Image (cartoon, rainbow over all chains, first blue to last red):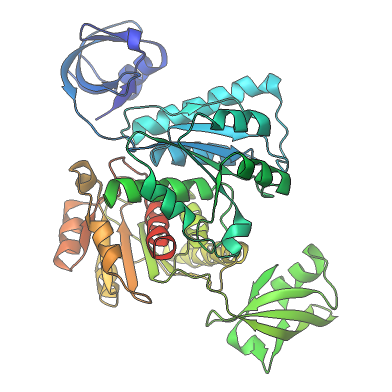
Length: 250
Length: 250
């Protein structure tokens, strides 16, 4: 069933109002009318089966038929801090990472990021990324839309990292040396509702200085298997591993 | 270090001859000359550190300095049979799936595949997919290039499946019903050097008839977590899960 993400204020007393783009999607793309049903998710990740009561102009009014008890979200909150890559690779990371259950994305302005962040044009880019996350969350039947943050510097990222229960860095030099057990050990220890920050370098990898700085700030250095993964593949690996360990194995 | 895949016959008595495209890559893209070193992998997945002895025209002659003992391949051989998807999604599956360690790819002409296979133009496409696999294998530092097979019908796929130790089908309807443990149970039982065939539906999913047919032929139906993954994301999930379980957890 089609699902839409609504703001808390759109959902009152079991009535939902949907306007603008989502309303046009309901009426023009899905060609729905009174009596049709959709799922609405609020900002708390609660979802409800809703029935269209009436459509007036660009506004769709719905009534909650039933609150659902869906468990679609990863048991742990994973934030992906991806070294700002070239081209549209981050779009792939956000789309696929959302399907795989990421909670948030922080683009990381790494020393070897070739793309330099232009904060003027940047707002539009973050908006575009957020839209990709929203659409992927709908498609994946999630109940929460991952947040896409403004790109962060090393210092900002280290600052933000203090709020996380666990923090790891994917480092290919460790993978080459055969580091195998750190990720499995973190995932064996992490508990329901705890948070995990995963830092992944850009195409050129992380600089020694960056790795040093993460180490000093309590990050665990992890290899993601013996093959060298591209910057846009590593986040998908870790998200699948988290899902496999916390959702399928437990 | 740059690596090249060579045919068994290119590697004799510790001498290697590289010509055509790879030779041009060595001389023009990498701008290498006598004394420079590369890694060559033969068809058995053995790799050797080699030194360039001389370059004449479009032929590069190398000498094996040392045979390497690299463990870059997944401990189990995973074949991905992906329902033939739209556009260039299969290119993504092959590139990322190769990085993540797949042994082979079989495009599957599923009932709901929108793209119809044109066997005339097909040969070119398989050639292109094979090239993507080769380049991704080099980049990921693998010692084997995954094979890309001609698209198979349901009957052909079921026939081929008899050669595998384990065979599973990703089925989103099971994921919706909360099936959680089948993949973990298969990965707990599979042993080193055994083979696993993974069937994944196209965009519209598998038909009831296809699912029935796979069930009757000994496939285990698996959910890949509670979120709905796109046809091109599911293979990446299962490959990461296999790597995590067999390489990082063991």
